Image 1 (tube, rainbow, N blue to C red):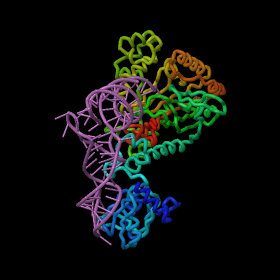
Image 2: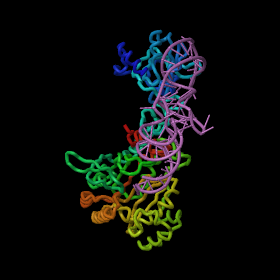
Image 3: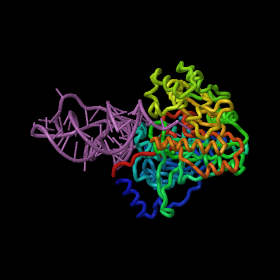
Image 4: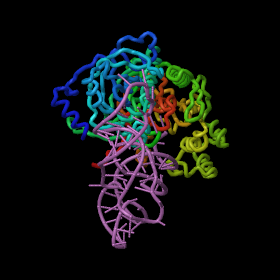
Length: 484
RNA sequence: GGGCCGUUAGCUCAGCUGGUAGAGCAGCAGACUCUUAAUCUGCGGGUCGCAGGUUCGAUCCCUGCACGGCUCACCA
């Protein structure tokens, strides 16, 4: 209320800060500190938020915070004049101000701006969080991210890094002649992945629409059309659990390359990740939550069957039929880990369950798990010589970070796989892939042999910024609304 | 969805065995022309998440609800 009164007084006096439209900002805090030798005694004009005000009588010190950090402002009545100096003293923490003055170093060695002219550019009606402890409550940090950004410099740093990582990934692909495209977020079919979609409605078309869960099927249409190399980086939406690794809307990159296979995708994956790490962290070895992760290529490659053998001591290479697999599942006590009833499970489901149970958690260092069962990979080309397996891999770094394969381009087989998924849907699996007839039609026109990959950008960012929760790398994570 | 924990001043947090609340910072008034968590003096500040219940009396005990955190399940 006091701040509102101050504002009202300023407005009554004809010095309404909200009437100000611009300020000429010549330098940022970091430039002044890093370029001190050249800037000493030179005039600068800075702007930012008042984070601290140390009033010692006829002089005072302000910590001014801008995009890059803080710089101290020194002001006294001598340089400003008594009236202006008294006016500045009425300002509050959190106010946004502009300062003109010259650069100097205080007796204690702090690089500062000696103020000659100071202007209140914006009045903060609400006080800032406590200056020493800052804003700690996670809920408030996520709900009021602007306060989090103001109070916690490492948060600003994390989001700057987020941008750099995304830029690095684009740079890498752009340099290799990938075309960046945009495909629909809204559609009548949410396919290309196994996930529950968000449902919405078009008034104009009087039609139920879904928010996309993947960009895969549209990007492959681009390959059919002859683009040869495409990618899209953008939001996918999955109507599923929310926790430290999952946000309902998240950023994914999918890319497709004609005349390439999943081996090419593996190289691309490890190279993109290593490039981004090098670019943003200055090294390909980064510490994530106390563990050193080595991103440098090549990453370990291990088949799913070998992973289950190594970590679970179960040899699936001996299993030939679904019946044998089900017997093995019962014997090894895997029935609890299956997503469907045992009798509905095939060999692929059981192998995958064994992998998830025994191996997945162990894959801390970047690892490619290759050769997935065809049963759980409906968009993937089968392995030559073994139709029960596909040319698919997932990259793991303590969790899944990428998924890629040699794309299935046989329209007849693709049609059959969709039919199979439709049956699973009827059996109650509401995450089974939706049938996309137009996509099958596109394959009938002819898609060259193609490698494709999806990388969870948020998860990559988590590793490179040492973020514990996905909410720490999404500016405005999904939150329940506060009641009232 | 289950389990555990939390919600007290603008912020960060105390609050004993049930007797209607405290500190620091922020704010307000004042002192101080090199401070940097400035310092010093004084002052104001609360629907103790919400709704019930038990009790002479509830921030405290009980129940429900809301929101959040952790965790399990779920999440190719």
